[in-house]
Image 1 (cartoon, each protein chain N blue to C red):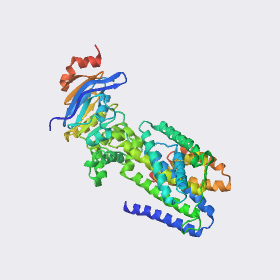
Image 2: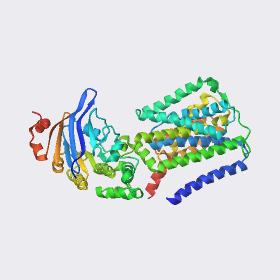
Image 3: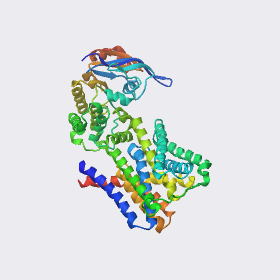
Image 4: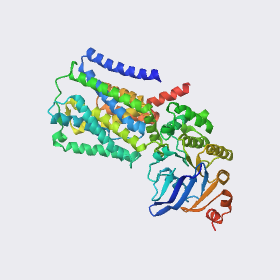
Length: 241
Length: 317
């Protein structure tokens, strides 16, 4: 597997007079693990909102598996194989954990699902996530770490080829971070490309094959983790002059 | 799954047969009047719940749809010289109100939460103003409708209307139940819980919302279509009555909005209680009763009767 699964070309996004992203280029190869870092307000979440379709970019283009998706609504992108988790978990609160997974299975992955086995498929995903025991619990009552797992489980149930994980580990304890990290690595082993947005450097450095750094809406660095740590521009962005 | 489906359709059939038996057994027309009102409330509640309960968009303009349904009947009946059969009028009302519902659905593109609700209320007021100034429809003075003197094999016209309303209500409940338990229903529930997350899980939120508002509109129009023949005199004040809109919200709230049976329970309970109070105490007091019930349920049991029962079951297990 080679060649980019996602390519973002000279993407610009403005909010009124504020330029949130300027001429950002980004590509993700099939099965790759990409870390996306940058200080607060650097445009990471805006970028993945543009990739998942929650926001439309003003200029530039986005291609997924060689198809232009720049103007496609989010649900069409989800069907094509782009899944995301949210920084602040957004479970379907009136549903059980299992039912939460039925939604992406019945919509995003509908054309790829075995329709008679929706519940079994959902159970398989929950088992990988270590949430099997909570299948019938109400999703609103989960603990913080289980809520994060549910976010990832729901993204995974959409059977994506690209997963965008938006700060899935923020606010978790060290052992919980490792737990989520293992899940993401296992997922990637099965051929899913992952974009990880994270502030926990230990996790990003361990996870990423390549890292892209954003600062004030522009890409300031790109490279393997070892290079990024030594990059003076990155240091300046994080620590100041 | 199989036996439950049969149980549902069996109860539907029992209700319809039961209704037919009633028309043979009971000869006091008052009972059919009362039952008609209760069923009309049930149909409105079920319709409201498709958008308000399943999809999470609260509609304050139910009376608008209901009245447009009623006035569609009046218009067609007058225009074609009292020859069109009731089913045609009902179908026409469904079509007109479905279109209005579709329009309201597009509102949901830009308006969420309380803003959407206010827009639906405004829509009802605009429609009421239109009708009030439309002389052909009787304007603000209202319109008289002659009850046809044919009523199939029934003993009176109201008996027939009762049976028509019973069939329509059972049909609406079946539709609502299908929506609640199907893939479509899960998509609607996802929209209610979190629209952005739903969209990212592949749910085509706009299309589903349009289906929901259109269906709601059509069912409310259906509820309104036979109304002129029931009361024989319709004016904007009664057709666009706030009471219709409030009942359509209160009944599902009391019964429970997340399950298809909720609005049915709420409507049967509240509707029958209203009938009893109107006869035994006073018709004014019955409005107070709705208010107290609603406040009571919203504060003490926000999930309605269905929610209470579910909670009890979970505890019992």
